[in-house]
Length: 313
Image (cartoon, rainbow, N blue to C red):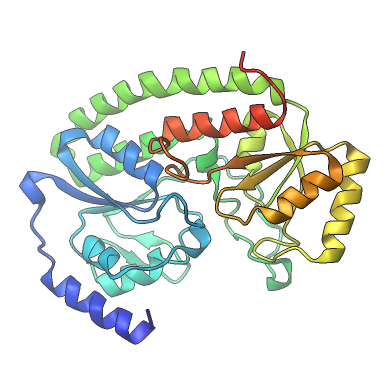
């Protein structure tokens, strides 16, 4: 949709949006499917949660839809990954939605009492020493794909609980009870997945995009390079030739392809090197039956183990 038409439709929808809370619940918008899941678990009956990005999309290229403006215009809170990963859709939509409780600032983040940034307290990896367009689509604040590591789930849940309690302090005790119940399920699952992933420690791999840092830290996999020439810049023949050479020299037998990227290049690399391809999601709902953070995490670890020829312990 062209920008003028999009804005016209978006503004029309936002004019029709009601500002009252639905059935006494907090209206919450979450940018990704796993954030929708965790917000529902922590918020319980006190929240009504709508999502934005689809799990099958590239989060760097989410298509803006006029319905997003309606959701944001009447929202009591927006839950987002942060570290500027939602740059393609959230910041512009906040401007159009004109919700006084949330707005984008000049450094591309959400400010206001309704903003719940799930990256708070995360040990951020891959912070660039300098930012230059010549190096591709770098994230100045560091790698934003921390949601791919199961051990970051508790921090995300705690951030959401704090945010909801700030917005609706009268229900703080309920949010804390829900958080405790969720962590009682999530933390043992993360420990179980870490035990499973121990079989992957020390393996060398390549990924399509530079988004595996946190999953690499969790599993012990050493992601030595990417299929992309640079972040957001597709591979060139020369790069692929060098990548094949590098993979053979270092004995790389594992390729991680994010679900939303085309498969042919990774299949070609696998044929050239004898490596096997693991297809991973970067958000929940990238595959059937992965709508929750836990199932999303389980699916990725299982895919890596299968591609690496490792049995589940």
